[in-house]
Length: 264
Image 1 (spheres, rainbow, N blue to C red):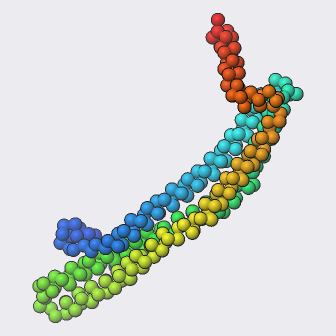
Image 2 (image 1 turned 135 degrees about the horizontal axis):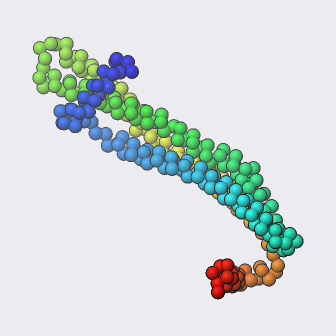
Image 3 (image 1 turned 90 degrees about the vertical axis):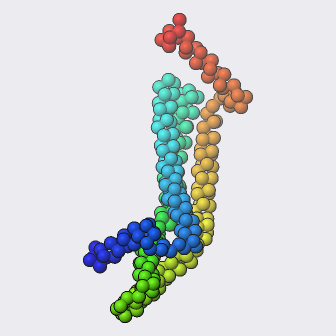
C-alpha cells in the first residue's frame, strides 16, 4: 500500500469512528441500501445454487457407482449358489443394467450438466467479487464525501482567518460528491438490472437440468425393467399383490429358528 493509500485508510477509519460518536453526519441512502440488500440475497442464493448443483451431480455419480458395487456383490452371491438359476441370471442382468447406467452418467449427464448447469452458475458467481469491490469502493468514497462535507460545514459555521481554506474545502467537497454520486448512481441503476436478468439467465439451465433428469430416469426405467423378465411369473404376481414382504418375513423367521442364529 502506498503512503497516499495508507493516509486515506487512516482518514476513513477516523471518519468512521467520528460518525459512530456523532461528530460527523453519516449519509443514509435508502434506495441504495434496499438494492444492496436484495443483491446480497441474490448473491447468497447463487452460491447455494452452485453448491447444491455440484452436490446433485456428485450424488448421482455416487448412486450409480454404489449400484454397480451392489450389483457385483449380488451377481457373485447368486453365481456362487447356482450359476444357471433364475436368480443368477437376474443378478447378472442387473449388473449389466447398472453398469450401463453408470456409463450413461459419464457419457450423457456429466459433461452436458457441467456445460448447461454448473458452468453458468460458476460464471454468475465469478461476477460477485467485482460487484462487491464496486460496492466497497462506493462506501469508501461515501466516507470521503461525508468527511469533506463536515469539514466545509465547520468552516461555514466558524469561518477561518485564512481566506483560502473555505474555497479549498468547498472544492474538496464538490470533487468528493461528484465521485461518490457517479459510483452510487451506477450501482443504484445496475444492481436492479442484474437482478432482473437472473430469470432469463438461469431459465435455460433449469430446462436443461429437467431434461437431463428425465433422460436419466427414462434410461434407468428402460434398462432396469429389462431385468424383470428373468424373474418367474409368480414373483411378479406376488410383488403386485404385495405378498413379497410376507415371504421375506417367513424366511427371516426360519433363520431365527436356526441354532447358529440363537434358536433353540
